[in-house]
Amino acid sequence: MDVHRFIIKAYPTEDHPEFHVWQKATLVLFVANPDPYVAEQKALGELGRRCWVPEAFEHRDTLIREAVLEQGGKVWDAYVQAEQGKIFWLENLESLPMCKKGEELWGTGPRLTEAFVDNLIQDSGGHRLTADEAGEFREKNADYVLGKYVLELKHFENEGLSVETRQRKIGELFKRYFAETPVRKIDPYTLSDRDFRKYWEIVGVPIQKRVKAASKQVKATIARLGSEQFEGGVILLNTGYLTVPHDFLVAMAERYASKDTSSIRHVIVISSWTITNGFDTVVNYGFHPHEPTCSDLKKLRDVFWETVEKLMTQMVTGELDSESGMQQPMSPTYFNHQGEMFTFGVPHLESSLKRGRNYPYNAIKSVTGLRPSSGRP
Image (cartoon, rainbow, N blue to C red; front, top):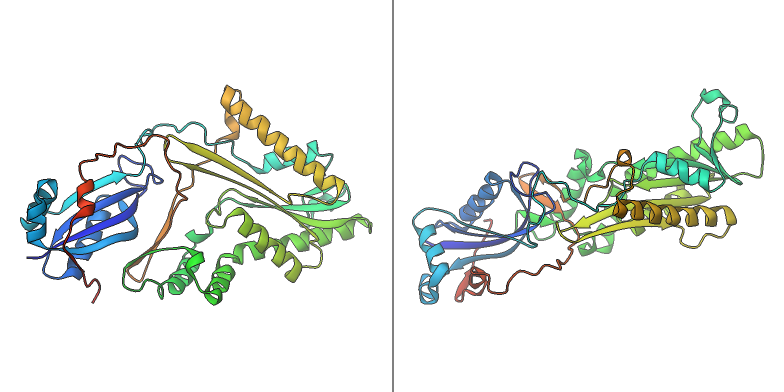
């Protein structure tokens, strides 16, 4: 009976008993079956049983028995195990598991909230609308006045790709790519120009809606204030929709403000995201515009970076107010569409703790004499 080898990049699921969802690994499975497609399905089923979600296949091979026997050692032992009807399984984390599940991961960065923006505006010389300015809050209003600007805050706290209708559209868009595999890595930069625009339209819906809603609130507030000196703007705070990178969000918001509104003349985007491998952690913050053209927004930018630096210092020294909370590291987003798995992974962070080069199963990657599996019929 043929023995098939599968090397799969994968992430632990939320239910994994040992690892965090961001602890990416390379999984190696040997599965015996006369049908390569059935073997592939058994391999994917084993991932699910062990609480792993696949990101991409690195290899799908049918091994030649004589070649494996000649190589011998642990590779041959794995082959024999599979021949005997047992699935051979190996998991190799990309980074050493320095932080076990259930343990607090230190240094992920202060979490940005609406209260953070409130303080930012106040320290920049602005304020939240008063009851008088807001018409006693009988109608929807913008949130802030900063100099000549009336600003509305919109906070993205949740992952936009967790919405089922959006998942279906993304699945239909990507299923034409890499059609030979039931596992697809969501990478918008692999799309054609036409499909990239479709992707933009799909993931941009929540952004467009919030920009348009902010426009109505800002317009109504400026009319109530009764002064032609005011200009409208929107502040987009992104701490959750992390499949949309900061620069991508800026471009989207600028486009929607220009195309769909008449009252949003200024777009401010604040993003925060953390990447970790359990030992090394990189905390990222972004502020747009980089180079504001007016003094009020320059002040806001400068206060933002000063505040972030102060909070990071307090985190390091242990003086950070625990009530403000810490950012959660980026985690993969995945979903099943028509029996196929789609995964948006986490940016890779090279570990400063290198694994030994003599890892005993590295030989599995150098098996010779392979013929490709046919995969899905």
